[in-house]
Amino acid sequence: MEEKYKSGFAALIGRPNVGKSTLMNCLIGQKIAITSKKPQTTRNRIQTVYTSKEGQIVFVDTPGIHKAKNKLGDYMVHVAEKSFQDVDVILWLVEPTDYIGAGERHIIEQLKKVSTPIILVINKIDTVKKEQLLGYIDVYRKELDFAEVVPVSALKADNTQVLIEQILKYLPYGEAFYDEDTITDQPTRQIVAELIREKVLRNVDEEIPHGVAVTIEAMKYDKKLVEIDATIICERDSHKGIIIGKGGSMLKKIGTLARPEIEDLLEKHVNLRLWVKVKKGWRDSDLLIKNFGYDSKEQ
Image (cartoon, rainbow, N blue to C red; front, side):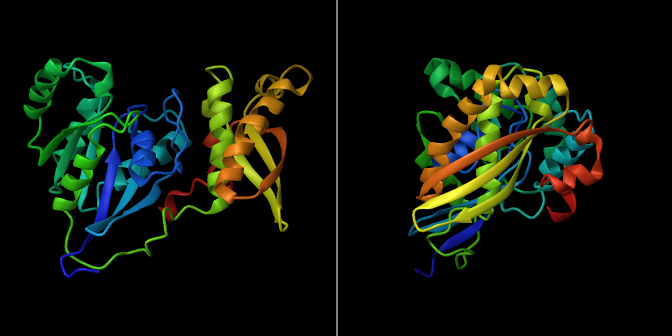
């Protein structure tokens, strides 16, 4: 690699549902973080890796910063705010608007405490007229001194290469942290579980997703086939009925939608078996939160 090679860490922060996971998936060119229209989709800090001949960016995708309502929420906020530390640059994703709400105000107060360069990334520019952008940028510039401001559309991959170039400007010179074939530090089981949870998020009623977790009970590899047993955890018996659906229709739909993406990930045919279990109040249980893969001590 060249002597002027750069490598470092970039944290993606923002309110829930501003498009952090969509942007990260777009930048690295592969789906690692799940996405949905429901807020608080990402629960763990996910590291993904972008590598080019100019440098390597390790993206840290975080849960959206929000007001916590239970121990799982506390954990998610802790993970997000901890990500401000030990990174070389912070990417703050916002939507194109001239209104700064309470959620953004809270993030602004957190960002005022850090000396790390902050790049304001205005996402979803495909939803507004170009002439409106300058006004939106001006509103945010009055709040913080940004190193850069980059408007993008993560959905349409507009201006994302410019964002890569701006991030590299603020990374130190040094060797790559990961080999060029690495795209994430997430265990395969975790990605598979999240792909299944995404299908639940996208297909069941509004009140259910926040209380859903997915655990992988077994993954058995054969030459051409992977046998996967997974359990969808919910908090109420009524939720279990909805996730299963009439005659098992919803559970079948979730499996049918998840299977092709898991097969793309594993590059093998997959036999996916799903079960649903009720664990009442699991989001307020330290033990169950840890058992389901959300352990703040590991972050």
